[in-house]
Image (cartoon, rainbow, N blue to C red; front, side, top):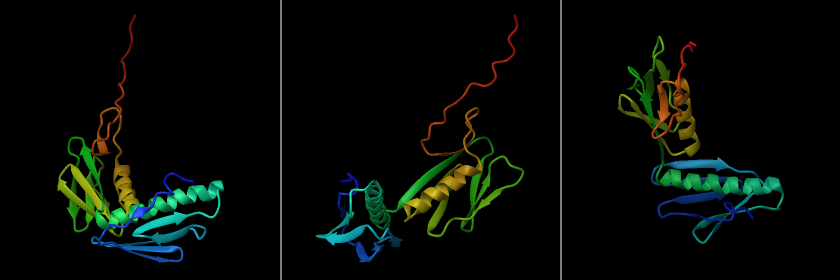
Length: 181
């Protein structure tokens, strides 16, 4: 059996889980998430936990088993704690601002870049060089953070650009100059 798939997902107090065939609905203090899963996977509620079972030991079913369990666990964490990714802008004159619900980035282009958040995702700018992406859905938060980073990824020569907080940018040496003999 899959190491991840066989672990039951604990349902914390205050979280309501509804299983309707292949659809799982998780409702908690921060909100509600709904996800449909492959019809071969059986999702059951057993003694305050959610258990995922697979029909066979085929490679395809083993992969789906762990995936289904991980997605359900992410839903439970999302409605109780939520997810957050922090990005930082590195570079002289690089800054971020919030305009309504959208994000405005000034990152060395001839024009500011405006980014609209995905549904269910909130963007916050606590400082001019820091962006916080929050939401219930782990996938949506990661996708929004990746879209923001893609505008100007941190480059290896000067280290300028948008990077995740704590990300180490591998620096490269520049040109060595002309060698004279």
